[in-house]
Every structure is written in C-alpha cells, then in structure tokens.
Amino acid sequence: MLYAALPDRVRLMEVGPRDGLQNEKVVVDTRAKVAFLADLVDAGLQRIEATAFVNPRWIPPLADHAEVARATQLPPLRGRARFAALTPNVKGYEGARAAGLDEVAIFLAASESHNRKNVNATSAEALARYAEVAARAAADGMPVRGYVSCAMGCPYEGDVPVAAVVDVAQRLVEMGCYEISIGDTIGAGNPRQTVQLVRALKGVVPLDRIALHLHDTRGTALANIAVALDEGVRSFDSAAGGLGGCPYAPGASGNVATEDLVSMLHGMGIATGVDLHRLARASLRLEGILGRPVPSRVVAALRTSLTAPPADLLSPATPESP
Ligand code: HMG
Ligand code: MG
Image (cartoon, rainbow, N blue to C red):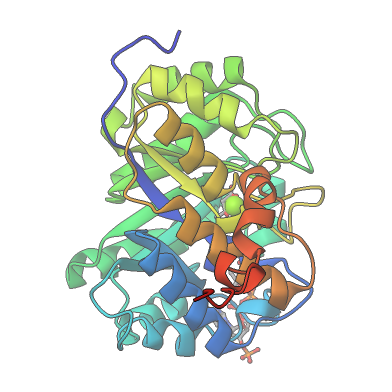
C-alpha cells in the first residue's frame, strides 16, 4: 500500500469560505470573508467554493452570498482562482451566474432522510431541480460540480449502501457534472470503506472525475485520503483550519483541514501549489474573528512560530559600541 505510482500533483477544492463558515455561530462579516478569500488566493489555492446561493433562512451565515460572489469578480480576487458556489435550485443558479461565478455545485445525499432535512425535498424532487440547474448551466457553458452527501453514513439512517452512492453519482455524471465529490458528511468512513466505495464508483465515474470531500469527525479523513490516493483518486476537498459541518447533519464536525492535507501531501512529495505557512496565517486570522482555535493539527503545531513577534522585535538591536 502507498507504493503504487503516486502522483506528482493533486487538485484541491478549498471549501472553507462555504462549508467552513456555514455552521459557525459567529457570522463573519462580508469584508472579512472577502479578506479570507484573498488570503486563500495568496496562499496558492486555485479552486475555491466562495459561498452558497441557498435560502438565507436555512443558512444565515451565508446570507451575503451575492455580495461575496460579486467580490470574487473584482480586484484583488478576479481571475486569480476559480470561484464556485452551491446552487440548490434555479433561483440559486441564476444568482450565482449573475454574480459572475466560474462554476456551480449541486448536492444530493445518498439518503432520502438527509435530502428532506437539508433541501426540503425528496431525493426525486431534488434530482428534478438539479436536472433543471444542470440544463441551464449546460446552455450557458457553466461548469457544474456534483456532490454525493452521506456517502459513508447518514445521521438519520445510519449505514448507507454503496449501491445508493453509486446510483446518485451516476445520475450526477449523466447531468454533466465535470467532477463528482463524494462526501463523508458526518466523518464516519474508514479506509476499508473508502477503498470499497472508490472501486465501486470507478464503474460509473471516470477515476479522474472523482473527488473526496471528507469531514474529519472521527479523525479518519487523512487515512481515507491516503488509501484513496493509492486507488488513483487525484482530487480532494478541504477547508482552511479544518472548519465546517452541515447544520442539517447533526454530529458532523469540520472538514479535513487544508493545512493538514497539504502538509501530508508535501511530505509525500505530492505538490499542491499551496504555501502552507501563508495558509496557516490565514486560518489564524480567522481564529481572531471566530474567537476560538481552529481544529487543524498543523495550525496548532505552527501556532507559536507563526504568531510569535518577529525576531527583531524580541531582541532590539543594541547600539554598536565604538
Ligand atoms: P425551501 O424553503 O423549501 O424553498 O428551501 P422554497 O422554494 O419553498 O422557497 C422558500 C423561500 O426561500 C422563498 O423566499 C424563496 O425565494 C427562497 P420567500 O418568498 O419565502 O421570501 N429561496 C431562496 N433564497 C435564496 N437562494 C435560493 C433560494 N431558493 C429558495 N437558492 C432550499 C429549499 C433548497 C432553498 C433550502 O432547503 C436550502 O436553502 N437548503 C440548503 C441547505 C444547505 O445549504 N445545507 C448545507 C450545504 S450541503 C453540505 O454541507 C454538504 C456538502 O458539504 C457535502 C458533504 O459534506 O457531504 C456539500
Ligand atoms: Mg461538507
């Protein structure tokens, strides 16, 4: 294991501004969100989910989605990364398109109960909405990414059959999604399950179009990513600082931290294009706003060195003696 041909590079989707902030008690103001996006771009992230065009009554922390999305099309952000947003229906899609976003994402759970709780629809109704979004996006030439949520367990139904995950993934591929992100929404998966799932998915989704979106509730996300790399997966979602969680998935905690993922990958000789120290500084700035430490292990390890005053302040230059 892990001696298969490892890639030189993988693709990341940074979901911190969306998944990371959607479940926070503190509502981060729009200017701070835009500054966070700028920090992420400066750290080298090339694909960023900036917000979600969802009902603000369902997700109050992202109620400013239109302002944030418009800001991605202005300096200092415009053209420096691909910016995406979740769009659960045509209303959301039209908002994202009007704001000038580069791509949109649709999201469907492999569990009926989670769809009812999360998007107020049966799976069949949600599929019909997404088919409409995908058709409009195709007509506009807008790339669509698809999520399969609850792929490794559902907070309401427990175990989720692999066949149900494969079925949703196949439908999203048929709708034209350029990449299918397999979500362990509640962080319940283990490496064995990850291998089984990826092998089953390969039958309906080309391997280079599979991504993993792993919440790290039980500390298994990096182990799952390591075995997925071995299986040939080359695209991973993560959130700066390890923030995140779906408000309609009780018990879910943050995404795998981008810092932790990048640190592991760089250590394995796999490039990401991300400057780890810059990214950790971005998460530390966010900590100041959220008023609590972010969950990332690597940020914790770097905290002292990155927040220490610069050396020249610690030891003021003593006047040279004649
Ligand atoms: P609904 O309340 O059933 O919608 O919500 P509706 O069509 O009945 O409309 C009700 C009101 O919502 C209307 O406003 C609409 O205009 C408005 P009113 O006339 O009452 O003032 N509305 C909207 N407003 C803004 N943007 C929209 C929109 N659509 C309707 N797009 C809906 C249905 C799907 C919109 C709602 O259930 C919703 O917003 N759900 C989103 C929940 C969510 O964002 N969950 C977290 C993201 S998913 C996740 O985290 C998992 C993931 O990370 C992967 C993983 O971890 O596995 C992706
Ligand atoms: Mg998520």
